[in-house]
Length: 506
Image (tube, rainbow, N blue to C red):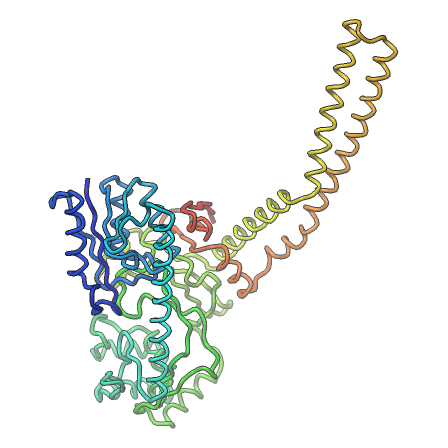
């Protein structure tokens, strides 16, 4: 079996002394050899640029897969914070290795699990590592805010069309700026739609910003028209984001998703060179105020960021289109990442309203069952029922005992009948009391029935989202077959390692 050596550096720590991949690799190999491991039995799992704040790391996941397959009997890591900087994630990995019978070694913390004091030290080191990560994140954010307030621009994954990032500033790209002005003129003065503008740009052979897309998309044109950057103002701290779950190997910026828009008072405005003049920008704004038109429109869904493809694990895209009959909302198949093979299942578009309602009904059902289960477990009436059951069982035993004594001649007929009659009376009273307790408990359980019924039909996005965030980690949807199959994964199930797999068919 293999001895696995796991090494990791993150983008913010790879230059740190003592944490380079080569330093970790050499220390771990020497440690493994000191344990009597043959060099041919050593397998390397090296994570270059993997953040320690979550478990979505390709090499770590590959290591855990090999552990579950029984290929690894020992794992060597230089320091606990190389395994993870999150205490909960680290505990999950340690438990997984222990459950598979794999011995975990830390070069810098030897014998970490051989005494209570050593385990305590290990947990202290893990807590310090998570604290350091939070401090690094806080200092990084503070440094960015200080730089932005000083007039600098933070780089993005791809520079905005019409600009080039240079030394903390946006510099205008003349040929791209001319295209931006044409887009504003076509939309605000000539009255063209965003789709028509995208088609004209394709016909003219205008390249996109990255040159990786062969065609212009109408959403790209719409973003250019909505971006205040082209009027001379760049905003920072506009959105609240979080790390996207399940994204592996994503490029800069692609691994985070927007969860909320901050209050405008928290935005930080930075002046940049304007591309369009105020009159041209005003014509675009006036046309947008002219009233609703057909075509694509944005609409919020409470499943945003939670609904992923059951096959490729990419997030389903939500689209809304305004038609003569009203807004039609659908979830469409997630496109393939650049450089990746397209999804072979080619899942069809599905109605968003039906999917959301099915997920919400299942979520309410689960919460209701959990609530009822807790109510039954903590119901004081259950103690009375248990006591009454014991008393009735004792009355039956006494009645049978009196009959047996009479049949054996140890008790005369009058005394036996009196004893049996007394126990029969107690049994009748016990049955009546049991019936009363049963009705009382049923009334207590049925009391919030109207509340649950009203909650199931509730369509408020905010309330639904709060419940979803509290109870569900993700929702997988398989639309590749004749029916749509939804699978809800509970947060509790992920934390305990147990998968919650209830399937809905719509």
